[in-house]
Image 1: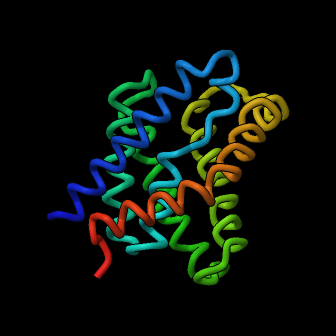
Image 2 (image 1 turned 30 degrees about the vertical axis):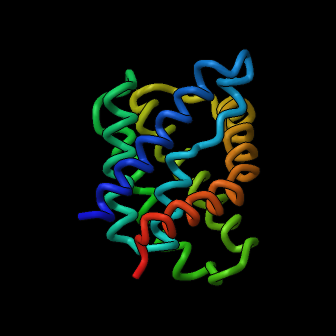
Amino acid sequence: MKRIIAIALISYFAYALEFLLYNFWGPWGRWLKPELMLLVVIFFNLYLGIRFSIIAALFCGIFKDASGIAPFGTYLLVYLSASYLTTFVRRYLYEPGSRFSRIVVVFCVVVGCFIVQTVLANMGRQVALGPSLVYILVPQLLTTLAAATYVFAQLKNISVFFTLKG
């Protein structure tokens, strides 16, 4: 129960930070916003396993869906798919303790979630893939990759504080 409460608090904190970055970081807030909630889901998958990653995905999805304009469940599906994609990538590409392999996991999951989110948001419409890649995926991917190492280190410190592993 303690782990679930800690995951809920960490997920909400990531949601609040994303909200602040998106709304109050000047004109660059819409472009240079790292996906902190996605990093939370990836972290819990790598640190505690798929079960707790799914719990983090549920919390992150509910928080984001409750405040967004997309149909309810869109981000829930995106974060759940991130959880399962992280498990898949972790099984075949991840080497524990390697920074580079964590970056590879983040890269694969961000690209996969971008694809899922693009498909869900544009069902029944024609999509201009070029501008979507240039104006959405590239800034999102670069800022998330840049923030990944720092965010993972801080999440590990928080997890040690809450004694989640063990």
